[in-house]
Amino acid sequence: MNYVVGGVAVAILFCLVFTLSIVINNNSLGKTNHTAIIVLGLGENRESKTVEYLWKRQGVKVIFFQPNWKSEEKLQDKLKRLSDLIDKEAMGNKVSLVGVSAGGSLVINAFVENKNKVDKVITLCARLRKGEMTGFRGFEERTKGYPAFRDSVILAEKVEKLFDENDRKKIMTVHALLGDELVPQNTTTIEGAKNITVPTGEHVISSAASLTIFSKPLVKFILEK
Image (tube, rainbow, N blue to C red; front, side):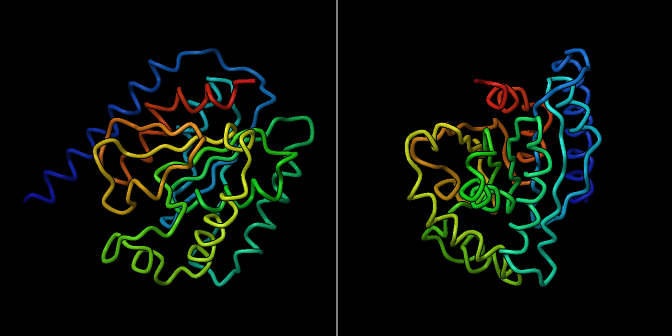
C-alpha cells in the first residue's frame, strides 16, 4: 500500500513539475545558437521532449547523449563519441555540457579534452569523486557492474585538480538540498565552481526537477557571457 501511495505522489509531483515549468518558462520559441548536450546517467533515461521544449523556450537547443553505461564500451570510446558530437555542434554554435547523475563525471572529462569548444559545464546530482563513504552509497557499491562509470569518476577526480580559476568559473554543480540516497553531497561539488542546490530530495526526482521546474538557473548560467 505504501508503495502505491508513493508512486501516486511521485506521479502527481511530476505533473506539477511539468505544468509549472510551462508557466514559469514562458519565453517565445525561436532560433538559438546555444546548444546543451545532456549526458544521461546509469538509468539510461529516455530522451525528454518536455526538457527539449522547455529549454528551447528559454533559448537553448537540447541534444541528448546516451553513454550506454551498460555496454562493454570503454570510457575512452564514450569520450570519443561525445567529443565527436561536440565537434559537430560547435560549428556555428556555443556548446555546453550537462551531465545527469553518472553523466556528470563524463562531462567533466569531456570538458578537459574540449576546453576550446565547450562554453559551460553543469553537473546534476553527480558523483565527481570517490568519497570516503562505504556501503550502499559508497563508490564501490554504486559503480559495481559499470566499469566505464567507475573509470570516469576516478579520472574526473584527477583532472578536476588541474582546473584553473577560469575553468572552475565555467562549471556549475547541482545537488539535492533535502538529501540524495545514492550520491553523497560531498562528492558532488567542485571548489571554485558555482555550486547550487535544488530544493528537493531523492536522486531521480531532484535530477528531473533540475531539468524542468528548476531549470531557469541552469539555462541562465549557460547563456551568461
